[in-house]
Image (tube, rainbow, N blue to C red; front, top):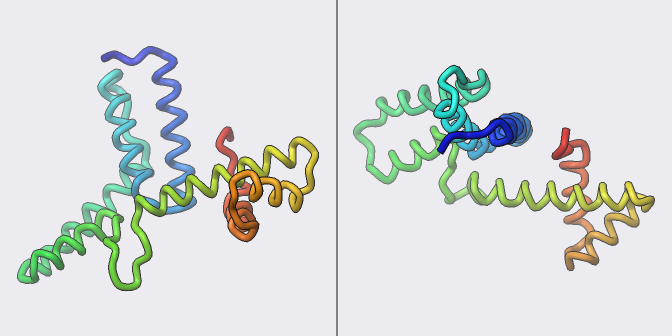
Length: 159
């Protein structure tokens, strides 16, 4: 289905959003989302190219995959773990807490909590009162809200 000008504009905004999220978190999901978004834009307009950051992301993944040739004799389960790592998706296991998918979900949660704190501050609350209000509204402990605020207070979804 062809993209209209509005769809193209939204996808371009999404690409910039994914870039900012990837630069901040290094979560590979955003590189893959950007790839898919670029492919949609390319289908609508063949002159569209991948942004440099997306090419750099995939160049690094390609090199990490190419490096796996030195481990050809190892067990398949070991290969799967190394390939997941090469693509940026660490498998759950010893010393690994979560993966790119759980991390992205937690990042989203924390960004949304920080946005709610920001909204309350805009309405005139102090940051301390806003953190308390957000914690109460969502039934969460204040330290979680403080951590989200510390991590994402300077990241604006609309900038």
